[in-house]
Length: 308
Image (cartoon, rainbow, N blue to C red):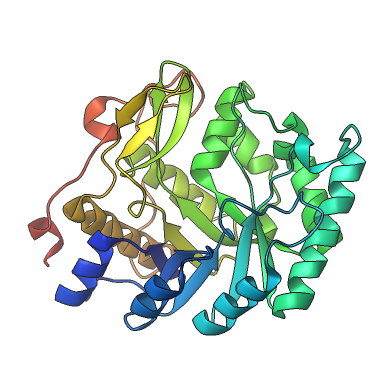
Protein backbone atom coordinates (compact mmCIF):
# COMPACT_ATOMS: atom_id res chain seq x y z
CA UNK A 1 0.00 0.00 0.00
CA UNK A 2 1.10 3.59 -0.61
CA UNK A 3 2.82 5.06 2.45
CA UNK A 4 1.37 8.25 3.97
CA UNK A 5 3.54 11.14 5.20
CA UNK A 6 2.90 14.66 6.50
CA UNK A 7 4.81 17.83 7.31
CA UNK A 8 6.30 17.83 10.78
CA UNK A 9 4.61 20.54 12.82
CA UNK A 10 3.62 21.44 16.38
CA UNK A 11 0.02 20.56 15.58
CA UNK A 12 1.01 17.16 14.19
CA UNK A 13 3.28 16.41 17.16
CA UNK A 14 0.38 17.05 19.55
CA UNK A 15 -1.90 14.77 17.54
CA UNK A 16 0.69 11.99 17.49
CA UNK A 17 1.11 12.16 21.27
CA UNK A 18 -2.66 11.94 21.86
CA UNK A 19 -3.96 9.57 19.17
CA UNK A 20 -2.64 7.28 16.48
CA UNK A 21 -3.56 8.87 13.12
CA UNK A 22 -2.88 6.93 9.91
CA UNK A 23 0.67 8.06 9.19
CA UNK A 24 3.82 6.21 8.13
CA UNK A 25 6.40 9.01 7.83
CA UNK A 26 7.07 12.52 9.09
CA UNK A 27 8.48 14.86 6.46
CA UNK A 28 11.25 17.05 7.87
CA UNK A 29 12.91 20.04 6.21
CA UNK A 30 16.61 19.51 5.57
CA UNK A 31 17.95 22.51 7.50
CA UNK A 32 21.05 23.25 9.53
CA UNK A 33 19.14 23.64 12.81
CA UNK A 34 16.95 20.58 12.33
CA UNK A 35 18.63 18.13 14.72
CA UNK A 36 16.49 18.88 17.80
CA UNK A 37 13.23 18.60 15.86
CA UNK A 38 14.60 15.59 14.01
CA UNK A 39 15.18 13.67 17.25
CA UNK A 40 11.67 14.51 18.49
CA UNK A 41 10.13 13.39 15.21
CA UNK A 42 12.08 10.14 15.01
CA UNK A 43 10.71 9.14 18.43
CA UNK A 44 7.22 9.16 16.91
CA UNK A 45 7.57 8.00 13.30
CA UNK A 46 10.20 7.28 10.62
CA UNK A 47 11.47 10.43 8.88
CA UNK A 48 11.73 11.66 5.30
CA UNK A 49 14.25 14.46 4.68
CA UNK A 50 13.39 17.07 2.10
CA UNK A 51 14.77 20.28 0.66
CA UNK A 52 18.17 21.00 2.21
CA UNK A 53 16.97 24.36 3.48
CA UNK A 54 16.74 27.61 1.58
CA UNK A 55 20.43 27.81 0.89
CA UNK A 56 20.91 24.98 -1.62
CA UNK A 57 19.34 23.94 -4.92
CA UNK A 58 20.50 21.61 -7.64
CA UNK A 59 21.36 24.55 -9.86
CA UNK A 60 24.22 25.53 -7.58
CA UNK A 61 27.80 24.58 -8.40
CA UNK A 62 28.54 22.86 -5.06
CA UNK A 63 26.67 21.23 -2.18
CA UNK A 64 26.32 23.67 0.70
CA UNK A 65 27.79 22.35 3.98
CA UNK A 66 28.06 18.69 2.96
CA UNK A 67 29.13 17.65 6.47
CA UNK A 68 25.93 18.98 8.03
CA UNK A 69 23.84 17.37 5.30
CA UNK A 70 25.50 13.99 5.82
CA UNK A 71 25.04 14.21 9.58
CA UNK A 72 21.31 14.86 9.22
CA UNK A 73 20.94 12.03 6.73
CA UNK A 74 22.65 9.58 9.06
CA UNK A 75 20.71 10.78 12.12
CA UNK A 76 17.36 10.50 10.36
CA UNK A 77 17.88 7.16 8.58
CA UNK A 78 15.75 8.61 5.77
CA UNK A 79 15.25 6.10 2.92
CA UNK A 80 16.00 8.79 0.32
CA UNK A 81 16.37 12.56 0.04
CA UNK A 82 14.35 14.93 -2.13
CA UNK A 83 15.25 18.38 -3.41
CA UNK A 84 13.63 20.96 -5.64
CA UNK A 85 14.46 20.89 -9.34
CA UNK A 86 15.29 24.57 -9.15
CA UNK A 87 17.73 26.37 -11.43
CA UNK A 88 18.16 30.14 -11.27
CA UNK A 89 20.18 32.62 -13.30
CA UNK A 90 22.29 33.67 -10.32
CA UNK A 91 23.73 30.14 -10.16
CA UNK A 92 25.63 30.69 -13.41
CA UNK A 93 28.40 33.09 -14.42
CA UNK A 94 27.33 32.99 -18.07
CA UNK A 95 23.84 33.35 -19.58
CA UNK A 96 21.88 30.26 -18.59
CA UNK A 97 20.73 27.85 -21.27
CA UNK A 98 18.69 24.68 -21.12
CA UNK A 99 21.79 22.62 -21.89
CA UNK A 100 23.89 24.25 -19.16
CA UNK A 101 21.07 23.84 -16.65
CA UNK A 102 20.67 20.16 -17.49
CA UNK A 103 24.41 19.57 -17.12
CA UNK A 104 24.43 21.29 -13.72
CA UNK A 105 21.45 19.28 -12.46
CA UNK A 106 23.11 16.01 -13.43
CA UNK A 107 26.34 16.98 -11.66
CA UNK A 108 24.47 18.03 -8.53
CA UNK A 109 22.39 14.88 -8.31
CA UNK A 110 25.50 12.76 -8.83
CA UNK A 111 27.26 14.62 -6.01
CA UNK A 112 24.28 14.17 -3.68
CA UNK A 113 24.16 10.45 -4.41
CA UNK A 114 27.89 10.02 -3.83
CA UNK A 115 27.75 11.95 -0.55
CA UNK A 116 24.65 10.38 0.97
CA UNK A 117 24.60 6.96 -0.72
CA UNK A 118 20.87 7.47 -1.12
CA UNK A 119 18.41 7.74 -3.96
CA UNK A 120 17.61 11.34 -4.89
CA UNK A 121 14.16 12.57 -5.91
CA UNK A 122 13.73 15.81 -7.85
CA UNK A 123 10.59 17.87 -7.20
CA UNK A 124 8.94 20.06 -9.81
CA UNK A 125 8.84 23.71 -8.75
CA UNK A 126 6.02 26.20 -9.28
CA UNK A 127 6.24 28.62 -12.17
CA UNK A 128 4.82 32.08 -11.51
CA UNK A 129 4.37 34.88 -14.02
CA UNK A 130 6.83 36.98 -12.02
CA UNK A 131 9.33 34.17 -11.40
CA UNK A 132 13.03 34.91 -11.85
CA UNK A 133 13.90 31.33 -12.74
CA UNK A 134 13.93 30.39 -16.44
CA UNK A 135 10.53 29.24 -17.68
CA UNK A 136 12.01 26.07 -19.19
CA UNK A 137 12.62 24.70 -15.67
CA UNK A 138 8.93 23.75 -15.52
CA UNK A 139 8.76 22.34 -19.06
CA UNK A 140 7.72 18.66 -18.86
CA UNK A 141 10.40 17.79 -21.44
CA UNK A 142 13.15 19.46 -19.39
CA UNK A 143 11.98 17.70 -16.22
CA UNK A 144 11.98 14.36 -18.06
CA UNK A 145 15.51 14.98 -19.39
CA UNK A 146 16.79 15.85 -15.90
CA UNK A 147 15.35 12.65 -14.46
CA UNK A 148 16.62 10.49 -17.31
CA UNK A 149 20.15 11.91 -17.39
CA UNK A 150 20.64 12.01 -13.62
CA UNK A 151 18.82 8.73 -12.92
CA UNK A 152 16.82 10.49 -10.20
CA UNK A 153 13.29 9.68 -9.14
CA UNK A 154 10.43 12.14 -9.53
CA UNK A 155 8.66 13.89 -6.68
CA UNK A 156 5.46 15.29 -8.16
CA UNK A 157 4.09 18.31 -6.30
CA UNK A 158 0.49 18.61 -7.49
CA UNK A 159 -0.01 22.13 -6.14
CA UNK A 160 3.15 23.25 -7.95
CA UNK A 161 1.89 21.59 -11.12
CA UNK A 162 -1.49 23.34 -10.92
CA UNK A 163 0.21 26.68 -10.29
CA UNK A 164 2.64 26.17 -13.16
CA UNK A 165 -0.17 25.25 -15.54
CA UNK A 166 -2.12 28.36 -14.53
CA UNK A 167 0.79 30.75 -15.11
CA UNK A 168 1.87 28.93 -18.29
CA UNK A 169 -1.74 29.36 -19.51
CA UNK A 170 -2.22 25.62 -19.88
CA UNK A 171 -4.96 23.27 -18.74
CA UNK A 172 -3.88 21.52 -15.54
CA UNK A 173 -4.67 17.98 -16.64
CA UNK A 174 -2.84 18.43 -19.95
CA UNK A 175 0.22 19.79 -18.17
CA UNK A 176 0.26 17.05 -15.53
CA UNK A 177 -0.26 14.29 -18.10
CA UNK A 178 2.76 15.58 -20.04
CA UNK A 179 5.01 15.05 -17.02
CA UNK A 180 7.01 11.78 -16.63
CA UNK A 181 4.41 10.16 -14.36
CA UNK A 182 6.00 6.72 -14.70
CA UNK A 183 8.99 8.00 -12.68
CA UNK A 184 6.95 9.38 -9.76
CA UNK A 185 8.04 7.91 -6.41
CA UNK A 186 6.40 10.49 -4.13
CA UNK A 187 3.53 12.97 -4.44
CA UNK A 188 3.16 16.20 -2.44
CA UNK A 189 -0.34 17.61 -1.94
CA UNK A 190 -1.53 20.91 -0.48
CA UNK A 191 -4.23 23.45 -1.20
CA UNK A 192 -3.64 26.27 -3.67
CA UNK A 193 -5.60 29.53 -3.70
CA UNK A 194 -6.59 31.94 -6.44
CA UNK A 195 -5.46 35.46 -5.48
CA UNK A 196 -5.32 38.82 -7.21
CA UNK A 197 -2.04 37.97 -8.95
CA UNK A 198 -3.05 34.43 -9.90
CA UNK A 199 -3.02 30.93 -8.47
CA UNK A 200 -0.65 30.50 -5.50
CA UNK A 201 0.56 27.44 -3.63
CA UNK A 202 -0.42 28.46 -0.08
CA UNK A 203 -0.34 25.04 1.64
CA UNK A 204 -4.00 25.35 2.58
CA UNK A 205 -6.33 22.43 3.34
CA UNK A 206 -7.09 20.27 0.34
CA UNK A 207 -10.27 21.05 -1.60
CA UNK A 208 -12.63 18.51 -3.13
CA UNK A 209 -10.98 19.31 -6.46
CA UNK A 210 -7.56 18.40 -5.03
CA UNK A 211 -8.78 15.00 -3.84
CA UNK A 212 -10.35 14.20 -7.21
CA UNK A 213 -7.25 15.26 -9.14
CA UNK A 214 -4.99 13.30 -6.78
CA UNK A 215 -6.97 10.10 -7.24
CA UNK A 216 -6.80 10.48 -11.00
CA UNK A 217 -3.03 11.01 -10.89
CA UNK A 218 -2.38 8.07 -8.56
CA UNK A 219 -3.96 5.80 -11.16
CA UNK A 220 -1.27 7.00 -13.62
CA UNK A 221 1.76 6.65 -11.30
CA UNK A 222 2.56 2.91 -11.12
CA UNK A 223 5.79 3.43 -9.13
CA UNK A 224 4.33 5.71 -6.45
CA UNK A 225 5.57 4.81 -2.95
CA UNK A 226 4.75 7.79 -0.72
CA UNK A 227 1.93 10.35 -0.55
CA UNK A 228 2.81 13.44 1.50
CA UNK A 229 0.45 16.05 2.92
CA UNK A 230 2.20 19.43 3.06
CA UNK A 231 -0.37 21.12 5.31
CA UNK A 232 1.07 22.45 8.57
CA UNK A 233 4.55 23.35 9.73
CA UNK A 234 4.58 26.68 7.88
CA UNK A 235 3.82 30.05 9.45
CA UNK A 236 0.24 31.35 9.25
CA UNK A 237 1.66 34.63 7.98
CA UNK A 238 2.52 35.02 4.31
CA UNK A 239 3.17 37.75 1.79
CA UNK A 240 1.56 38.88 -1.42
CA UNK A 241 3.57 39.49 -4.58
CA UNK A 242 3.84 43.19 -3.68
CA UNK A 243 5.17 42.44 -0.18
CA UNK A 244 2.01 42.89 1.92
CA UNK A 245 1.61 40.50 4.86
CA UNK A 246 -1.52 38.33 4.90
CA UNK A 247 -2.80 35.65 7.26
CA UNK A 248 -3.01 32.14 5.80
CA UNK A 249 -4.71 29.50 8.01
CA UNK A 250 -2.61 26.35 7.62
CA UNK A 251 -1.96 24.88 11.07
CA UNK A 252 -5.41 23.89 12.34
CA UNK A 253 -5.28 20.44 14.08
CA UNK A 254 -8.83 19.48 13.07
CA UNK A 255 -8.14 20.31 9.41
CA UNK A 256 -4.91 18.33 9.60
CA UNK A 257 -6.62 15.29 11.05
CA UNK A 258 -9.47 15.43 8.56
CA UNK A 259 -7.06 15.48 5.65
CA UNK A 260 -5.03 12.57 7.02
CA UNK A 261 -8.21 10.56 7.37
CA UNK A 262 -9.35 11.31 3.84
CA UNK A 263 -5.92 10.60 2.36
CA UNK A 264 -5.82 7.30 4.23
CA UNK A 265 -9.18 6.39 2.69
CA UNK A 266 -7.96 7.51 -0.73
CA UNK A 267 -4.83 5.35 -0.63
CA UNK A 268 -6.89 2.34 0.42
CA UNK A 269 -9.27 3.01 -2.46
CA UNK A 270 -6.28 3.21 -4.81
CA UNK A 271 -5.19 -0.23 -3.62
CA UNK A 272 -8.59 -1.66 -4.53
CA UNK A 273 -9.75 -2.20 -0.96
CA UNK A 274 -12.50 0.43 -1.15
CA UNK A 275 -14.82 1.77 -3.83
CA UNK A 276 -13.66 3.28 -7.10
CA UNK A 277 -12.63 6.92 -7.46
CA UNK A 278 -15.44 9.47 -7.85
CA UNK A 279 -16.01 11.19 -11.16
CA UNK A 280 -15.55 14.92 -11.54
CA UNK A 281 -18.86 16.73 -10.81
CA UNK A 282 -20.61 18.27 -13.82
CA UNK A 283 -19.45 21.82 -14.49
CA UNK A 284 -16.11 21.48 -12.64
CA UNK A 285 -12.92 22.22 -14.53
CA UNK A 286 -9.22 22.22 -13.69
CA UNK A 287 -8.05 24.96 -16.00
CA UNK A 288 -7.22 28.56 -15.06
CA UNK A 289 -10.80 29.69 -15.55
CA UNK A 290 -12.03 27.54 -12.67
CA UNK A 291 -12.65 29.37 -9.40
CA UNK A 292 -13.04 27.35 -6.22
CA UNK A 293 -16.07 28.31 -4.12
CA UNK A 294 -14.97 29.39 -0.63
CA UNK A 295 -16.76 26.42 0.94
CA UNK A 296 -14.58 24.01 -1.04
CA UNK A 297 -11.37 26.02 -0.90
CA UNK A 298 -11.20 25.83 2.88
CA UNK A 299 -13.21 22.68 3.62
CA UNK A 300 -12.17 21.31 7.04
CA UNK A 301 -14.78 18.87 8.40
CA UNK A 302 -14.69 17.54 11.95
CA UNK A 303 -12.66 15.09 14.02
CA UNK A 304 -15.83 13.31 15.14
CA UNK A 305 -16.81 12.52 11.56
CA UNK A 306 -13.58 10.54 11.17
CA UNK A 307 -14.19 8.41 14.26
CA UNK A 308 -11.28 9.71 16.33
